[in-house]
Length: 203
Image (cartoon, rainbow, N blue to C red; front, side):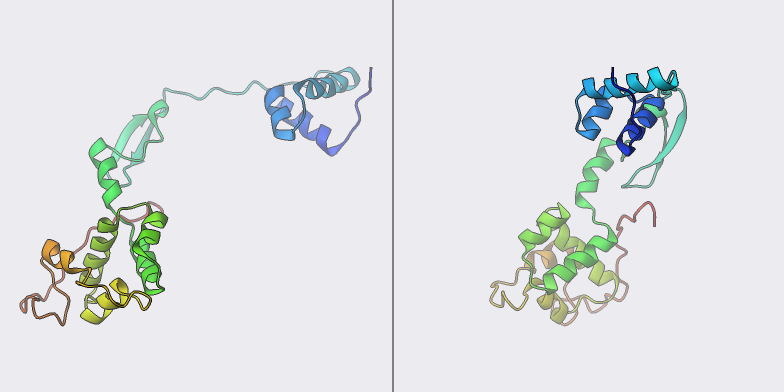
């Protein structure tokens, strides 16, 4: 029988085995056969005694954790076994598909001003085009930046100058907010609505 030889790879195998990692898992990670891994730690035990495997502790299902919903921010008390859910209710899970993070709005505006198509923006953000456009519209209004010139810059970049009729017309009808400089804008509109944009949990 072969003796155990010290090497970086063999030391990794012994250390992993001591932590209770099974031979097949070690073999897969190192690109070896399970039989070869078994031979190595058998050789080690013949030469140095029992490896002393530490039993891996099973995950407890009896503890409780508080998790914050990514959409509404509500805290939900769950058992450890039920933890890992991103939303508190199916309604919030569905709503998340129609909500953009603030930094995503800025990213979408930047992409459009650099000439990217709405299809490309949609693919990157994984949101439908209507959600992205409406989020941008409300965000610009909230910041007092919803001007006709900026809207044209975002909705009709230089490489698509001839979009007719204006592709933002549906937003004026849907939101009832016309850009500054558009004759349809309500002259009494002085306070921009607050757009509820979900913030990152780590913000």
